[in-house]
Image (cartoon, rainbow, N blue to C red; front, side, top):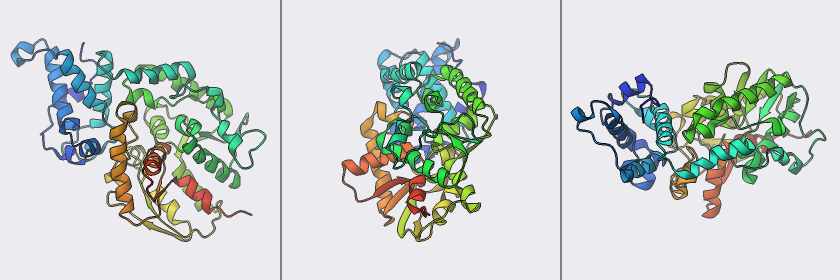
Length: 395
């Protein structure tokens, strides 16, 4: 294979790594698994060996091609990563590690040494346009489970705002409460919004994590076109990965907001009325929303605007927040490691004395709630829109 999966800048960045090991100290996978081979240091060393083994100067480098066993062992470590970006956050020389990991995954797909389970991601998206391979016509069936679903199921020909629901919240029962809550809040606040229904396709983010970005454009083009037809000026996302995907890979055609930003705006406009909600809560910064999009303040402002709430910070918060374990397609590759990372997050939340851990990501909710339920942990897990919905004052 050629080395075309890496940019010239990335090839240069690889050589700037000083082997300081700071990234290994903050890596959730390394800590949970106790395995140094999951660290960024090991991964970068592997990329160096791969690039040298393909070079015309490999004899000078004394580099030999990797054996099938070496490829498999290395690939297993590369895909046991949540893509949380904490390694990049602390890198003292500023290597853009998250993009490097995406390029590395693409390389391993092209070299055909990636986990074969990940092929299901591409197959499901090709067949049904969602990451789970479910019937895309069922994307808004959650509306029927609402307490008072509207006759139009929030489907309008034209609207000012499109609520882009995302795959996880559309299909996972534990996450479907999030779009239900946000739809109720937007209705209560008299927001002119619509869903896309079966016309909503996956944003494409899972393709990046699977190392298959060449298939993205079709999803980008489709989603842009269906939103144009709605005449919308803004798109709201409760999923940080969808939001981040639109920030980085879609053209700047529409105004985009994460739900926390949008809710904070509604609150400031006095369009949301709260009742007293006596609770002690802590907040988990999702990796893509926090470190990725640098959205730290709005979620905290929303939480602290609710009367009766006592807010306590996690020991690791904002850009230093520890991953929940739910990113990077890790659960498909190593569910046990995902659970180990989630345990550390839950233990940290329990140490604050909070009754609930609030986040703003359906994947974080799903991952943490799965761990809490399986282990009967006395901790409530909810998305921030669920918290706002609970505090909503009814007329």
